[in-house]
Length: 422
Figure 1 (tube, rainbow, N blue to C red):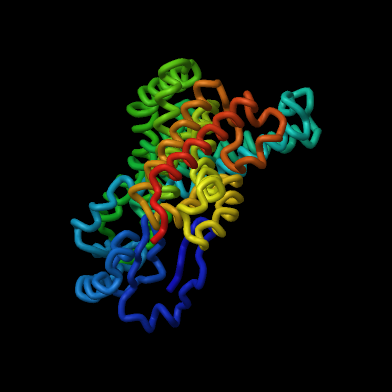
Figure 2 (figure 1 turned 135 degrees about the horizontal axis):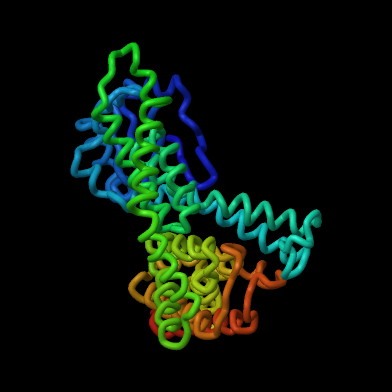
């Protein structure tokens, strides 16, 4: 069994293991390179199917797996058409987001370090040659410049496999240059992916010329089509939409900030690292790359609140928890401080109907207070450990107040709703 996560592949399958396998079963919510499985029977589905009924999934895979074509050939579907449609656009979008986030995190933290080393004007031209300026250039001019191309490229990769990467990244770069931002990048990724897949399925060449498809014909045609559509059709209207969205978010105050904070903060606690949580985080991270840093404050504080609130609840209401849960409270506190919302999952899994609403309430309060108080955050990760960095947070007292209030609401709600263990 090979696992593929945010840190890459582990226990990678060897060629001998692949050759000896009866079938290749892929259970993933992001794109997986299948070129090494050419000639093998392959069946692909999402992770939920594997978690829900692993034994039944294996039986289905043995019955329905189809042969994976070699690169450059038209591939037979790896699973039934209905199953292929099920994850749909969301799977492709999440593949792009998963590859994009390391650029966001690395770039954001480097920019924060630039401010910490060189002050608020560390990236001004007059400071060229200093360490702060260099760190800022790496973060802002290199890492952040690649965010939209990476998002678009790997959305296209999820749709069309490797033939989609080049047109997707080029379309993403066009989106960035046209000021269409992450919305334009998403559009470019889907255009490039579906264009490359359509061309790959419908262009037929003699066997002697088949090798030209992946290196010449598909990149050239898909890039040309994607680029022209981005320049003449998609770029300008999407840029206008993004500009309007950016202006609205920067001008948020009063009721609009309160509602957005409630929504973003609450989303972080609904599934604690699942699709809803990731959707909120990805949206805030993409806006951060466009210079809008208020949503990230609501997202990070809302994501820290669930484990911190549960850790506090184990201290305020110890009789509501088992011995093992009380012991886990300390670990939850550390995870919450580091902005790892998943630290709340064991508590939520044990009593979801009472714990999850309590977590959502506390996170929503934290997010709403953060945006209402004008808190902004220029760093996409790090939790409490980035708060002391100069200029990383606007209105630091407001951020601490929002986090404390959300944590207290979560703890009190859990204490009131949760029953004593039997």
